[in-house]
Length: 303
Image (cartoon, rainbow, N blue to C red; front, side, top):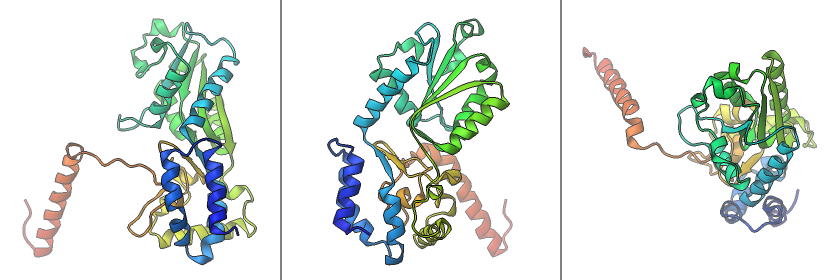
């Protein structure tokens, strides 16, 4: 194991990627020693391996990659303003998400014609679709491919005979396999473009001990910190170690990004609080259930 200051220096230098520290890394730098010091001794070597293998993407580097990926896209064939549209993956709740953030950045950095960038492709008529050959999706990270394929399902018939490009900064081997299988099963043409592709953490032979022992060690530590079981290995067992300047994907291992009452993570995932008007219905239902349960306990009739 590295000495604590040496470990911090190693990680901060890696995450900065030869750029000036951004606000997120400055916060990490202030908290790193306290965070690692509080890890129980028996877990420190496992956590050190995890943190040394975490990838962090500062905004300046992300912007460079978004430009590089656009250049790569243009090499792939007949891409022009006349036959290509640029879109994002919508959130289930209709609010902004990282895909929208990166779509906006991509549009600005690559000086795209705003008439080729669509928030709602349902507004494109069937006649207009005849002239569209390429649909380009923009996102920051793809952990399983499921969110992407669900988005494709919404307008799958319209995509037949077209080229679908999926641009991400980082992706996983699992997501590429899932997307490839989906492509074959649905007679589509999907071309992923990305900067980096990773295996699941516990499939990379990172640990000197048995990977299964390391996994169990992570589970034990996560349980100590009251991190939910569904988050131990990231969303849908993604086993990812990645964070971006704007947020941390839920595919990332919970220890890195999930805060609890007795644990503050190093790269916490941003979960904005819902305004009251979005929770009124839920709060009302919860109060009704609480009143019902109270009366039931007292043997009263509930109306």
